[in-house]
Length: 165
Image (cartoon, rainbow, N blue to C red; front, side, top):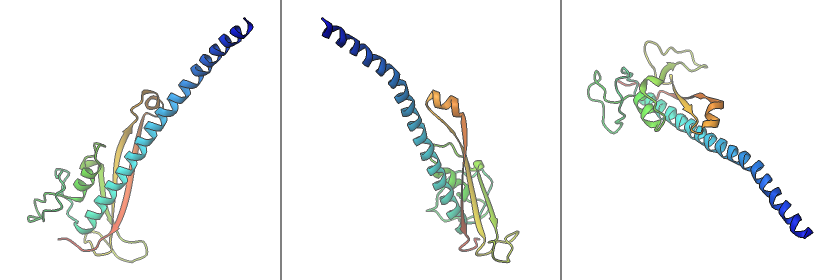
């Protein structure tokens, strides 16, 4: 009789332990899922900035934000109507982040150790600096309510290899 009573208490004890541990494990899983998504979003943004800066290093055309395609396999035949740009290539590389060409900033500056100007005329060796920004929102309600919206930004720089056009 005494052994039966002790086993009953042990079952109740494991139920209490389970009830105390499960919420902690669930929160850790939610944090891991959203943390992984945030790292993926930042890596995607960094790759988009790197791709856009690389395009800007070889193609300095900077049309309005109306150009939204990235057709690097097609040469630009009409300089007044380009069908792709560095901003558009960076935005199209940031898959899943809703980045538009308006979220991409492109600037050209001289290197720090060289006496040259990069404005208004670009020269080989000027630095193309491209910044991509996006907003990240957690998908789990608990983490999303704690963190809110996070502004992510990535920057990449490449020296100009040629001046185009």
